Amino acid sequence: MKRPNAPSITNIIGVLLVIVALVSAGGLYYLASEYSKISETLVTTKADITSLRFAVNNTTGEVHITVTVTLNNTSDLDIEIHRVEYMSFVDMDSASLGSSNSYVGSGSTNDGNGTVPAGSQREVQIFHVIMPNTIYAERLEYALDGDNTLLAYISGFLWFRISDYPDLTDIDKLYIWHVSQETIIYV
Amino acid sequence: MSDTETETDMFFSMNRLKLLVWSMSAGIIVAFFFSTNFLAWATSFNPGGSVMFISPLMCGLILGIVTSELDAVNTVIGTILMTITATICVVLTLFSPLILGIVIDPTGTLIFVDLTKNIMLTVILVLPLSLLGSILGRVLAESTLISSSIKIERQALKSETEEWYKMLEEKLEEKRAALEKLEKERDPDVLNVDIQDDPQQ
Image (cartoon, rainbow over the protein chains, first blue to last red):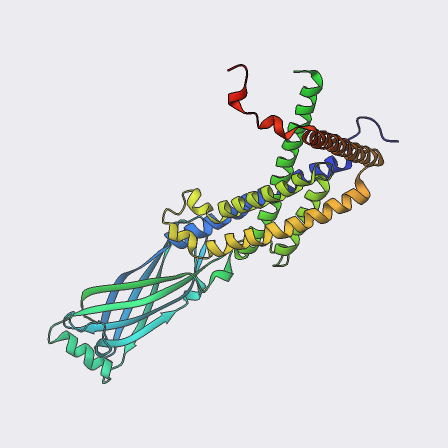
């Protein structure tokens, strides 16, 4: 026999529904905070080409182009470098810089999937070699135009991924570019 | 105001409060499963796409059961409230980087999710499925959960209402018949009185 003040079955189910809803609300808050952290990482992470070096080997005649890319991670999540790729162009002036006639090669690295901890930065060095007596060496000579300076343009992409969320690989792409007047170093 | 009226008002306001709390709770649960699916890559917990169909149906079913002691219209209102709550919670979750002030640029939040598509999907799926679930839940509760005393009480109320309607019909019929009788008895010449022959003038 039912007691006069006993709670009804619907009220018991209702209370259970509220308890499950409280747990779900906690889950929603966690999800929202994780999503916010990821968005922050994707929006605030910056990559720049911080230095460019042209070095000629006097013995072999090879030209070593060294590009330093700096990845700055100001977010709360660790990130990993997935790949860095660039194309390099040289010319004596900016009129045709970036065209196919000024292209002198490309470089790439995955930097061993180096990790950039939260709130830190990492420098990645990439280099490629221009062999003597090639069309690229001729373009470099033309760009030098008798002196030791040339106008260089580097353009490329840096792909990174958030260490805790590896599924985001295809999305995290940063465009990197750099234009500067460079002096050839002879070593 | 008498004590009985006060008690009745309190009963109805308590029922409204319960309806509000239960509907919002069901909405939050549905929003959790929907948001988890929309942001599946941002969490290790991914129950799969099928929960987008199952969760509104099940929450609607439970809402139908818990509102079975109230009028049927309350169940419908409950599902609408549940849909509104679920949509608001999904919107808040998807806009969280903007709301928390982490990403100032609104395009920053649109990198991974199509907001319009997800919000539309929430509304389109939740309302009909939860309504279907609540109807099923109500039917289930009325056939199994509701106590025999409530059933008897409802039956008595139903028969009393029907009796009242019957009495009302009878009264109306009596009144109609009396009016018709009066119309027939009325002499048509009385209405065509010649004003000039009126002795009072």
